[in-house]
Length: 111
Length: 118
Image 1 (cartoon, chains in turn purple, red):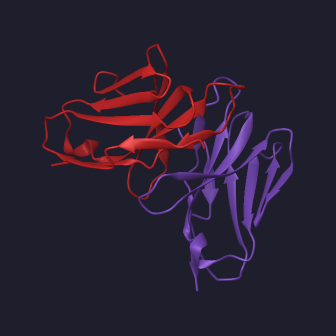
Image 2 (cartoon, each protein chain N blue to C red):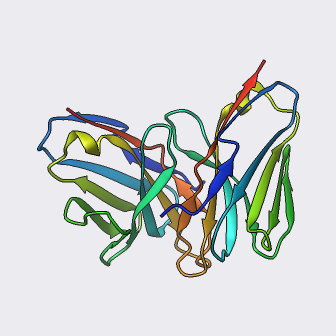
């Protein structure tokens, strides 16, 4: 069953602006991951943050994790039109590592 | 490295036929592969976890007799949709996890297979 909820469901911004997406989950996790999916394509892994980490950076991406609130955020700075895609968070449990995906945020970056 | 392929990328079939989808890890060994289904504008729903050499573990609500999974080698898992019906039309995505290392290694996703059942 899906346990992740993301907001907003859709986000439209201008190129150069920052985009922030949030993810909430319900159970204990080992790690939380963010993925990107271009329309009709497979998933691209962006970043993984472990349950004992609070913040992680990768290029223009910044991810935070608050295990007390069971939430995470993905910030994309200086967005580009090529960042237009759907973004999903996914949590891995402590049992077998299977991923449970959030509902996703559809990001549109207008040039 | 860490490339996962799926074949076919698109398939159209008649209602009542069976369709096989292959998932291959091209440059690494994967003891575990996962199969997801994604309906338009929706998220990925985990269908089953496939472990090499053993029976797949299906998620609640997924019919194991309808979605047959075989993981015969460390680089290949297959999903067969048996007696497909229009409601099975969906985007099917597999992922693979490295054989070495801990349980929580990153999963690498295939490009997906678009199934349309007429």
